[in-house]
Amino acid sequence: MFKGLVSIMYKESRHILRDPRTLFLMLLVPAAQLTVFGYAIDMDVKNIATVVYNLDGRAESRALIDSFTNSGYFTIKREVTSGAEVNHAIVRGEAKIGLIIPHDYSDRLLTGEHTEIQVLIDGSDSTVAMQALNVSNAIALRKSIDLLADVSGGATEPPIAAQPRVLFNPDMRTANFMVPGLVGIILQMITMLLTAFAIVREKETGTLEQLMVTPVSRLGLILGKLLPYGLVGIMETVSVLVLMRFLFQVPIAGSVFLLAGFTLIFLFTALGLGLLVSTFAGNQIQALQFSFFIILPSVLLSGFIFPQDSMPHIIYLIGQAVPATYFIQILRGIILRDTGFEDLWMNGVILACMGVFVLTLATLRFRKNLG
Image (cartoon, rainbow, N blue to C red; front, side):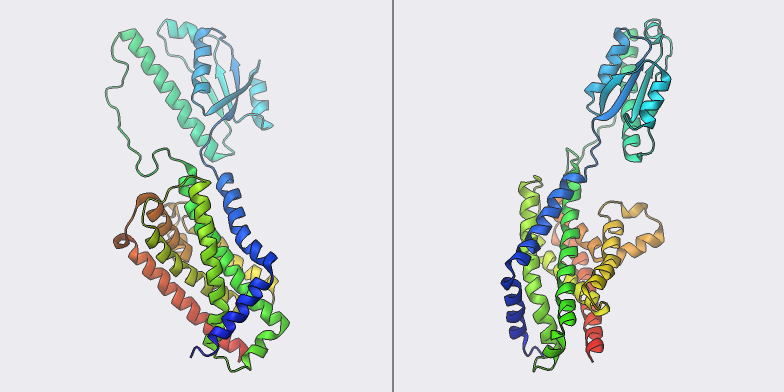
């Protein structure tokens, strides 16, 4: 059944090693992608550009502006002299926030009257807008509590206070959440593309048909083509995990061996996807186009960026058919929460079943196409 497997593996390995430039790119591209995207995808909104229209100009209003600056979320670009300038700065993108302090702000505070400040927020970027809204409300609430305490001479703390405790990622670093998911996406994408291109390239040159007339079994031919790229995938896994640990300072809280075992299952599935793509494609351009049918759902529907629980039900179900969904849950579980085998085995079983199904389907199509 596996006749010729070793010969095909030797041929494919020689082909990979004979082109050191391609091998270098195979290993460099995942590391480069992880480095670039790991730094680029940052949801920690800081230093929001802000312009201030301060009609009061006294110490109380300046203290309010200092509260915004010292929060770390706002950077005061400049003070303007009219409301129209505030609007113009937001419209042309110079500022995301416009802070308008009325002329009687200090007077009302000193007499204990209610006063309002206006915070104009550019809602075109919902992430920045939501962060700015929450922080500005928190600043106003904090200053109101301090003023009420000064007037009453009582405690400065509200009568009820929540005591939140953030587990596993206490600093709430974006890198701790995004980089493990990015590892899964990059591994699937690179492994699948390498496998698909390797087989399609044989089709284009006509050497695949020559191999089929040799005394090599078809299963031996398929596995012989896949296994060398599986080894490349293992090397890529090690390189991106090392980068994750030492460049992005994301520690692995759980078992490295458990992570390695689940990663092998995922690579098996990704190799099967590459083989399946190659059965539909007649050339490398088509292979790239077909790959996007798998890559896009993996990025958008797997929970890598957007939480699956907030998706419409039909989209959620489609996301459950994506292998990256289960591998990202495994990665984040082991790396961030020290999740054990007893809580992750079902993800591994689903991944393995997907791998067997995809590889079987790809093998059947492979035979049909060459038959």
